[in-house]
Image: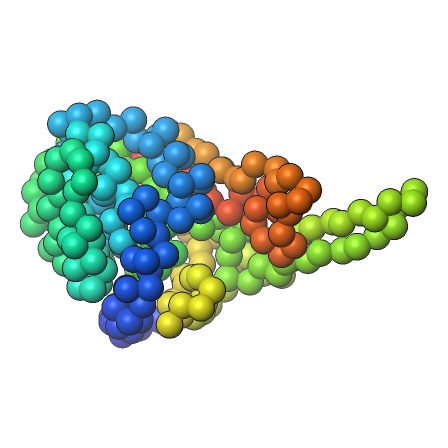
Length: 269
């Protein structure tokens, strides 16, 4: 059995170590991954409206929080990394409503509920499910935090493709006198993979821990707590121009979505 408490504490230390790097990587609006895949899919599912109360869970460097605040939403943003919260606060809110940032652990059910029962129109969690060792406390709290008819929108690493063990493959062949490059993923395990320390971005100062969950397990946390999945997106990059193609990169594997985005709603609001 995994030691969730120690794994979570180790994760906090690692994220604090690389908070400055991550803040610089994402800047004001997020990197290409977020701008082209994560943010558009989350906004399409969330349909945010001015004045809505939104909780951004595991907000990281705060790019989604800033985007939602710019759209007129009232955003509460939490993360267990003190350093990431500090960098997010320094960026402020260039336009829109102010953001309430708090250091809070997404595995601490009581702390989450203390934010206010039935307070939020929407919960959002972008690219963080795979960084959290135990999702049970989060989903138990989520059903209490949402207003009736509210939604919980997420984006996460696609467990079928962007798991803990994908291998990038590139082949060069001669076909009818032409050089043809074929790019693919090699997946050797899916149903059961242990947590690993992986690189989130090239040249970062520290890796962090990834928790792979197959689809039935990932969605099961929501189903067990009274949620249904009522929308699902699998965003991928547009086909690259030949001169922009990068071997062994997600932008070249445009037929394979690295992100899974979805929307949960309570069955009995």
